[in-house]
Image (cartoon, rainbow, N blue to C red; front, top):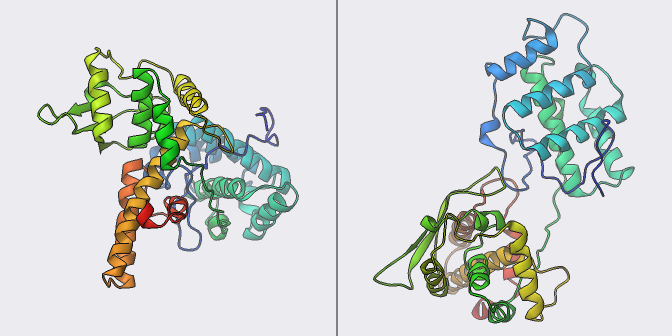
Length: 373
């Protein structure tokens, strides 16, 4: 659905990332799209930004006014201004504005302290039944509502957060498309240019995001001079995303050799002097040349998912060996948790939230017996 801008009731694309201002509670955990709730977003009434925002709404007071509580349409812009002050991403602000605009459309422009939990439950039912929102879209909108009323409570506009007890619908696991080993081998074999080979192998053998590949500097690569098949890659920057999970990744022998050859050509300030769009072109063109047919286009994200499933398969094989050796279910659960954390660290994901970021990879990894993985 194309983006439209203007009044509150005009909806943004449903694929926008979840706004992650709210913190998890026992009654209703926070969702995750690209990560868990941002710890930088924890705020208290003592926060100067909160105090300034509250003053703009209620005059000099930061507690609830004696009468004339401001309406939703007046508090929403203040909330968005506060979110901008704490440096939330523009697409997050746009999606929150639309989500809260739908709340005003449904409830009317009532005072902020007049909204009840039952109102919010009816709102979510309306979104699902009348507007046909899917699970991902519902989770995003509930997150926006929770964040907004958490802000209203913090600035003293109401004593509670009625959205605390809103329940997020369980996300349906989305199974990504991946390349199996034979397809990945065909992809590599179809490359006919050294730069393209280096890009393809970096994506396949490290699981980096496209913008992390674009941001790589020659100084981020270390090749052991004594053992040229060994080395590591440091992720220190990203070209587009605000969120960066700095990490180091071991190079496979084939990637170490290819990157050493590439560095010998005299790379400049960027390891790969190409755009993110060009990376898409490289992957799509090479996949087409290799005759790889998938439901969708072969993308850099598909290569990242391929890396993730390969890593999970290796760990499932170890778990099966431990099972045959007599490990208890408790010991196996601890081992699985450790393995999932390892894969999260490789991918720059955050583990430990209410949604398992590795679950979809485990489903795909289990499709082949561990002995074949």
